Image (tube, rainbow, N blue to C red; front, side):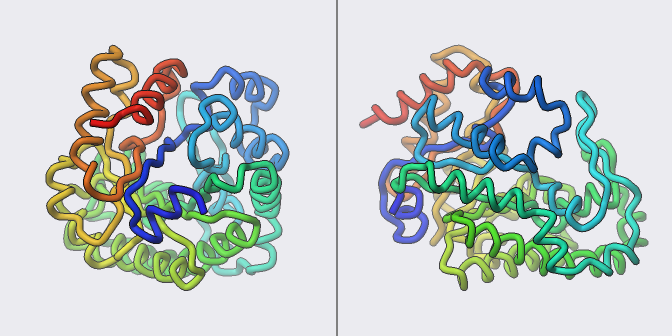
Length: 336
């Protein structure tokens, strides 16, 4: 069993380090592959290349866990919605069609995502058995933000528009929950042994809607993973002090902090859960002294309890791999 699984399942206090977006744009070896594969969606669906990219940071840094190279928007794609990634503008989805969405069938959905499952299988066979293989999904609300293009700049939400679409949102969430559980099960069957749920736009949800749009969907997915006996890490980014309510209601095995959460507050308020991450990825753009200072704060705060070292969001494209290497070395050698 990997250290990550020991921490999440048995609440053992041992060291484990990995990074969100550890496989990606900041690595020269990834850029080499990307230069020959301009279509990002096709790259995600290329099983051999997806596996190769997944393993690149393991080969370079010997991290404790691999996370499959994919994207949360692979699910809307498999449900029939057009997904296009444009450099400098991010993802853009075609207009949502409810009738077509409701006609989706489980078998067709799984078939469209079979390259992802093949990539997981290939990776698991190549990966050291002592290392975890993490797969992930986007939470229903976060997917809906993209699917309905609720807010293009993603900084705030038009409450009037949200309430007008409430019936539609409720309907989509219910369908998404079912297909996401299918996707999770397929990933587990292929070899994934940890699931992370990214609710990246949870911070957009008004407090009065958090239960319906964040807590309930994440609870359903968490309970499903627990029935599969697979640990789950949830990341409800941007919900501030509502992290405490989320943890008490959803009860995941692990919860990822975003940089806005004070680690001292988290240690005090987040009980019966493994805390992961929190360090601002921008710190890796600063001096070595800044990196050490930032990392030390999290390591010291959580040294007495099970904690997984990670960031409060994904590694940035402009990150220097040498800085990542120094951070990993510092964490592994830290004994204070």
